[in-house]
Image 1 (cartoon, rainbow, N blue to C red):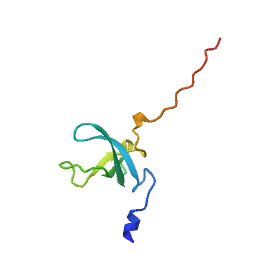
Image 2: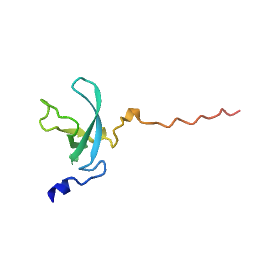
Image 3: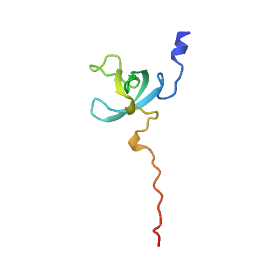
Length: 93
């Protein structure tokens, strides 16, 4: 019974939901990490569990505290999101 409760999905940015954030791997390359929000600390940060890899020597459990504004709902980096081009206007005569 308890296991089913832990698998209940939650919507972003609530506790239990999945999220993504930009990070760097061990080689210094930019990567997008998938994580699950474990706790909202109430101070603008959240405790997350990183899903894609662990951090040997950094944190044993793959958990870390991160600013909530660094988290997003989709895997696509914010810098690569599709932006609608501005409408061109004709000059008035």
